[in-house]
Amino acid sequence: LRIRHQRPSGPIQFDDLEVGEPKYELLVIGPRDSVLVEVAVTFVEAAPLELFDVIIGTDVDGDGEYTDEWSFGFASGPPAAPALPGDLTGDGIVNAADLAQLLASWGACAGCPADLDGDGVVGPSDLAFLLSNWS
Image (spheres, rainbow, N blue to C red):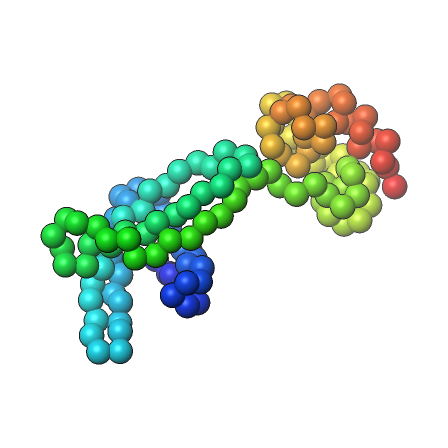
């Protein structure tokens, strides 16, 4: 577990957390003292276009009472639309590479980049849209 914290009111970033037992311990080293802190992490699946507040509670003294130490918010949503409609690879042109990506995503694929018309399925209308923007 690696945590980056820029400043007390700034963002906290968790990297490389694995799904499983939702408790982690970290050593917090302060100017005068250090303490082993247990952190409980809950993994959730974010739905498109939702706002979240994450509150990280710690049990510093081990009594089972969690204290709200840090919190931060974020928004989740679908991937950004490509700058050029149909350019699924992001290389600035609509070509065979984009067609290959669209065909590889064929079928139910809600929220994926190849769902160009946003109907939750990569199908004939997405193919027509891509071909109409062919470079």
